[in-house]
Image 1 (spheres, one colour):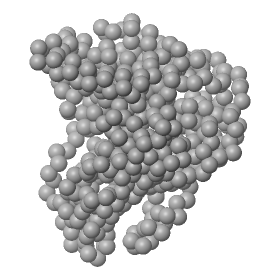
Image 2 (tube, one colour):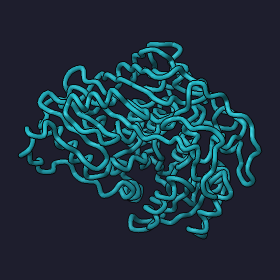
Image 3 (cartoon, one colour):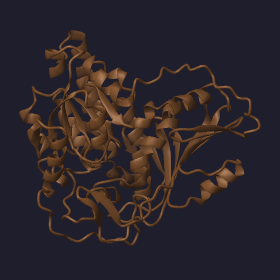
Length: 465
């Protein structure tokens, strides 16, 4: 799986040439749906991962035909099948895809982060449309690979960033692009969401993970490698670990706390970055990070940090950004820098948020609201007439893109979501390398050799990308 950068770039170039040639000759193979049905019929969907966020996705896609479920936990498979009976059930998605190649049209990937890329890439290579939860990938290389394969196969894709379709995000983007606060000089994004209870909700209710949990999706720098515990009946732990480096089962990894461990997750930044950073990145087209610096507690070889500060600069932006714009990320239980920043701008603190600092004023936003500051200056502000077409719905975008065989209908397709995820994950590369890194997106490398090692991982035998 581990390609050298030279081979990776060569493969990317060949993929682009092959796709162009296929379009020219008309030899692009259509997915099963497009060969056998019309756009008014239902998609045959296969779900990889059927619990957690998958339950919400299922409820939003229930107008389609649920053909197959795959989960490494037999208990979860059983519970999902009770709600949606009649599906074919599998423990191993590789077997499912091979057996149902001509029976399914699209795949929904709702696994832990470390399995996103191999599951999605296998499906896309088989010309299946693909919906994948955020972050798109666990490694920077995986995100780029997923975007390239989606482009090569001409399949519809969508990453699970639901706020991308919400009205508030469009309204906030229109305010910025109307020039109401001038050119954007800097953006600040923060999350202070934390889980320190020691409990997570599992299939059978609350589960005590047996250790004090750190802030957000982090752990203390002193956290040791978890010890081995008996594997619960019905859980195929080897399949759960999948392509990652093998670690013995411990209840502190599942069902949700895998986000706290480097081997499987990417901490608070990995969980929330693609949601909150999405708005400024899409609005200002900050898709080519130039330098990334990060600060946090001492790096733990196993566990993600309890707090993190990251600053990004960019090779390019659109005309709504001032030269030298920075994007600044903060997470942790308490964030004194944000408290001071908001106080200086006379903005009340109200949880997670995004602050656009412009040459003429400020704009605060979160998922569902936005406010212009200073409030007195903007007391009579009137929203511009809408000029960005609104979404038909996050999930509907994907299903319509599949049915119409038009990848552009999905607004968080992998072409964009891959670069968004790259940017997010580069913050973790800089933090773990302990250095400010310069990013060369065209040649897919950083200025620091030891940081380049953190861009990808070696998959276990039996797993490919």
